[in-house]
Length: 182
Image (cartoon, rainbow, N blue to C red; front, side):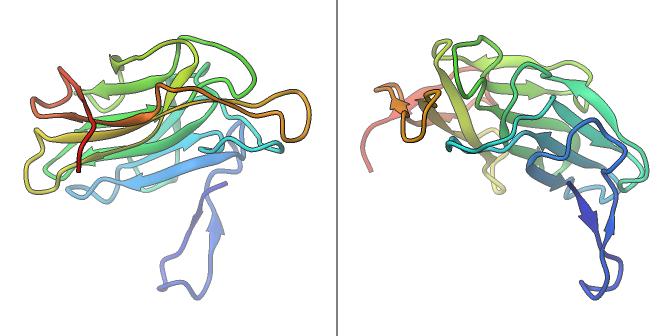
């Protein structure tokens, strides 16, 4: 779940228990507005004993209330990044189904705080995004870590594809190129 402290970590209160999932892959507070919090549900890693989630959540009141913004079929959201100057410009890394193919995976961008989510980086139905980050000095630069992986129905039955890699966008997420050196 998601827990909150108001006293520098001395006490913690659960603030996500009323939602339909307790599995969380990432929590991000908007740098320009600490009342805006985004939560990616579903564990953000492939492993034999994982739990999935049901999408991207947003709170505009510091975690008092939550709204599911979509990506319910992504099942695993391991990374979210928020523009340092614009709480409504976000990128979401959707890993996708852990045991089979699906199209709701890759990198999504929203310019309106998650109301609309545009898939801006998609490799194929077996390859998702595990992490995404905005360059804090130049918000037009975005990096995404792409992971081609699937779990088998048995212990240690994992599959890893060749499409994994690090991608970079220099135009705010509109176009991407795979980084192969450095």
